[in-house]
Each structure stands twice: as C-alpha cells, then as structure tokens.
Image 1 (cartoon, rainbow, N blue to C red):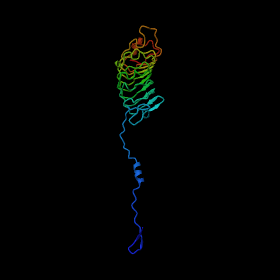
Image 2 (image 1 turned 120 degrees about the vertical axis):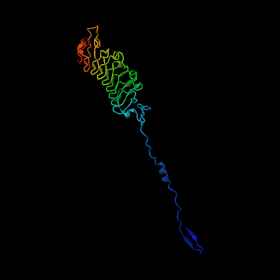
Image 3 (image 1 turned 45 degrees about the horizontal axis):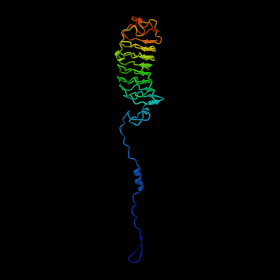
Image 4 (image 1 turned 90 degrees about the vertical axis):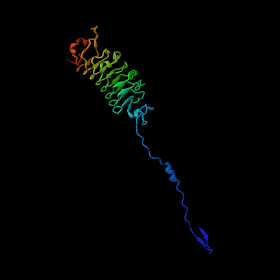
Length: 266
C-alpha cells in the first residue's frame, strides 16, 4: 500500500490480509456425512405382506427365513413356535424339530397344492378341527413324536399318516376316520394309548403299525367281513400288534382273510 508521510515521502507498507471466510467445502462435507446408524431390536413378525409369501419383521419373505425349492419349504430346526405363512404354490412343507404346540385353522389356508406336511418332533398337543380338511390334495401327514391325544377329520385324499409316539387314545379318532380314504396305504399308530384297532379300514391299506399300545381284543370283522368268508384283503401284508396285551392267537377269525398273519403274541 502507498502512502504520503508528513515530510512528503512516499512510504511503502503492507497490511495484514483479512481473515478469509470458513471454507464452504467443509460445510458441504459435513452436510453429506450420514448420522450414525441406530440399531433397533430385531423382532420377527410373520404376518406382514410380501411378494414371495408374507414377510417377517426383518423385511424378509418366509422363503429367505426358511429354504424354498421347487414348491418345497424347509423350516426344520429353526426355532419356530407356529407355522409361518407359506407361498401359495407350496407342495411340501417340512417343519420338523421345532417348538410348535398348536395348529390353527388359518395355518394352511388357500394352499390348494399342498400334498405333504411333516411336523415330526414338535410339541403339538392341539389341532383346530378344520385345519386340514380344506386341503384337497393332501396325501402325507407326518406328526410323529408330538403330544397329540386327538386328531381332527382328515381329507379323503390321504395316502400316508404317521402318528407314532404321541398320546393318541381311541376316542380321539373320529368315527370311521379312515373309511373313505380309498388311497390310504400306510398308517403308523405305534407307541400310543389306543385300546382298539381303528375300523373300518380301507382296502387300499398295505401297512398298519399298532405296536406298543393298549389293545386287548380283536373284533372278528376288524380286518375281514364277518358274513363273507370268501372275502380276501390282498393288500394288507404288514400288521404289527406286538407290545400289546392282546393275544392274537385267541382271535383267528379276525385275520383269516389276510395274506399274512399279524406280528404279535400273548
């Protein structure tokens, strides 16, 4: 800076530059920096909507929580305490070794393609009356190793029923429970508290396991036709009655129509 002194001399001087304003770039960077993430507690809610089946509280459809493959849904040993919402095209559902106690009427709604349910090794003690009756293609129902005393009415389409190792009692079965199941081939009822053989049984039946129950007597027409001595039940070749208090040798007329004698003794 040039200035004139009192003596007429020109002085050369410099003044300190003004302090520059704070950089606007720093402010912009601060504005762009995201705030720290807030971690929320994780909870599961299977009732929300979803594209591939209802979503969980994690924002995942059931088929990311379980494993879905070509119509089969695998939820084995995942800690479930109820049936998760299933995709409408589910054909086979596996929910083994979980903590499910109650099957509700809404659990399998609108699953018209469902053919197999495997809930082996849960804690099921209660089933709503119509929980399975509306499944037109159901063939396999596997409920072994649960706590069931009764079983609701089942669709006539059944081929295999496995109720081993429950607490089933004879009055817990519907009257004529298996009569109209013309395709039923395998019926496993061992290790329960049944006091009689469920009858009538469809002619399609091949395997009947009733060992380790409390059966004490056999009716003459439980397998055969009392008034038709020419009747032969050709398909039923595997009957297990061992581990019951019944002495099968005292009831020869009960199985004269069978291709093989039942396994059992006094």
